[in-house]
Length: 495
Ligand code: BES
Ligand code: MN
Ligand code: ZN
Image 1 (cartoon, protein in one colour):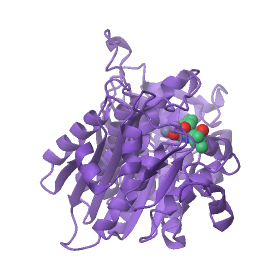
Image 2 (cartoon, rainbow, N blue to C red):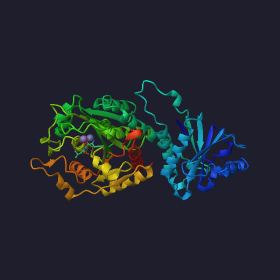
Image 3 (cartoon, helix red, strand yellow):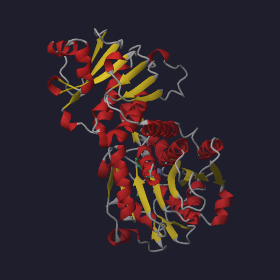
Image 4 (cartoon, protein in one colour):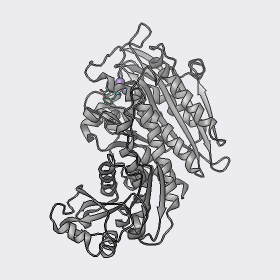
C-alpha cells in the first residue's frame, strides 16, 4: 500500500478511482461532500433525497460518474453524529470505507474522512488512518497452499486529503512505520509454534539488526544464561527440546551515553502450561503467548523506520513451556539472577519466571524506563475483557505517560492497583516467594511478582492477554500494543 498526504485538495477535480467523503446523520454534508455537491449541481443531495442512504454510522453508498466530478467513483460514508466523531471512530469508519471497496476494482483512493477531525487531533488521525487501512487489508495466508488471488483487494494507493493547508508528512510516515510494525507483530504471533520457536525469534531479531546500521543484537544462549545465574528463566526453557534464548536488540538513535528506554517482551512461543498442563480446549491459542515479544520486534521495526532520536533496547525472553522429564515440577525451588529464590507452585505461571531474569538483566543498561509487555494472565481478560490492556507499575509518572500515549493511539489501557496487601499473597513457606498468588487479583499479583525484580528503575507492565489476539471466527493477532508503544517512543523523542 502506498500512502500520501495532500493538503488543500479539491475533491471535485481529483483524477482517481474513488474519492471518499463523509455524510453525517440526517444527510448533513461534510465539507468535502458539500464541494462535490456544488460541483455536481446538487447530485449528492439528490442522491440522499432518494432515501436509500442517510449518513447513519458505518453505512456506505458508492456513486459512479457524478457529473462535474473527475473521480470515477465517489464513496459516501455514513459518519453518524458529528459531535461524536473521535480519532478512534474515524479509524473505524476508515475501515468501513476499505471494506466497502474491497470487492471493487478501485486501485487508488483519495479520502477526505480524516479532514473531519479537529486540527488538534489531526496528527493522531493521520497516523491512525494509515494503521486502520493497513489493518483492514491485512491477510495472513502464508500457510495456505492455494492463495485466493481473486479475493485479494486491488487497492494499492491511499491519499489522505485535507481541504485546508498543512504539512502532515511526519505523522503520515510515522503511521506507515507503525502499520509496518503491527504487521511484523501480527505475522509473528499468527505463525504456529512449530515455526515460530525461540530460535526463529532470534533469527528475526538478527535480520532486523542487519537491516539497520544503528542496531545491533546480542543473543544469550542457555549456557550464557547459566553463567549469569538466570535460574528462573532456565527453569522454564529446560523442559523443552527448543533452546531458550534471551534476545537483546539495541537501537542507537540517541546520543551516546544517553539512558535507553527498554522494552521487554514475553516470548513463550508455546505455552502448554508445563507439568501444570492446560486443558486442551483452545490450547492452540497459546501460540500467541509470544505476542509481547512480537510487539517488541514490531515496535523496534517501527522505531528504526522512524529513525527516532532515542536509544532503545528491545529484550525478548524466548522459551517454550513444555511438560517433559526435564520440566520443572510444582514445588521446585529455583534461584533467579537477582539471587531471590522462587517456589514454582504452578508451572503455568511461566511468563513471570522468564521475565524476572530479563528485568534483572535490564539493570545493566541503566535504563530511563522499562516497560514489559506480556500475555501474562487469564485474569486480565476477566478483569478488562478484550478491549483494554492492563497497566501496572512502580512509577506514577511513567504510567501517566503510557495512558496519554494510549489515548493518542486509541490503544486502550487501564491502570490496576498494586501494593503490600497484594504482595503478601506471594508468600512462600519454603522460598523467598511463590510464583503464584492465588486466584484473587491474579493480574495484580503477577505484576507484584515482577515488581520485585524491577526495583531499580521506573517500570511499567502491560498485560496484553486480552488485547493481543482475537478468538472465534476472526481468530488472529491484532498487532497491539505496537501503536501504544510507538506513540510512547514518539512522545519521548519529542518529534
Ligand atoms: N499465557 C498464560 C496467560 C493467558 C491465558 C493468556 C489465557 C491468554 C489467555 C499464562 O502463562 C498463564 O498460564 N497464566 C496463568 C497464571 C496462573 C497459573 C496463576 C493463568 O492466567 O491461568
Ligand atoms: Mn502459562
Ligand atoms: Zn503463558
